[in-house]
Amino acid sequence: MIDEYIEKTHLAINEGKKNLLKGKLDKGTYYRVLEEYFSSIYQYVKDHINEIDANTFARITSLENNVDDFIVPFKTHMEAPNEVDNSDDYLLETIVYFTRKQLKVKESVEFSTDNLRKYDSTANTYVKDMCKRLGLLCYCFNIADIFDIPKNHNIAIVKVDERYYLVDTTYQQYFMLGQNFKDRYLKSEEHVVTCEVGARILGINKEGTIELLERGFIDTQDIMFEDYFTTMFEQYSKEPLVGEEYLDIILKHFNN
Image (cartoon, rainbow, N blue to C red):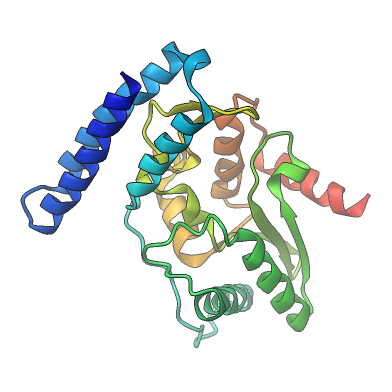
């Protein structure tokens, strides 16, 4: 039965893409149809968890990766800052611009289509390099190394004039449609994989989400900073904290 579900979903993805290109199908309908197909797969996995082998999980993951579209429209800022309205913003925009430029030129990243899942660690290297050039304090880290959640994602906290900012130039890796169906459920040897944080964060703070996706940084005093980590905690059914607590844990990690 699972083979049948996978095959039908594969055909639905391919036919849907063709009809989208021909203008015979709108994205909303395409998403809803795919959600039904994937829901059948996820429900089957839940009901037959002990029967699903590694190959089947890989095939399902491959299906998800074929749905190569973002669940929310955004325009990644790729321009160098040229006006100084706010000195903090100017420095942070410079850091993000340098990082994204390096990813595009040296790593051949295409920000309009790539999910960037493989580039967060490399991005942190460029962020750290730029902060060193600018004389700014910068903490680069993997979220899984600081918080008790299996979320392997590299980000940075940058201090500019006594304020702290979250810098995440590859946040878009969490906004691919294939990982954001609400009934998503896959169980690996390490942990259960559920709906990604993209759909979760859009439900509570779409404006802040778009800002972070486009600009690549956010003030840690902004509610989006709290929401950013809260949605990750909730993905793993962990009790969320408040913004100051998240920042305090990060700073203590580096200053102890």
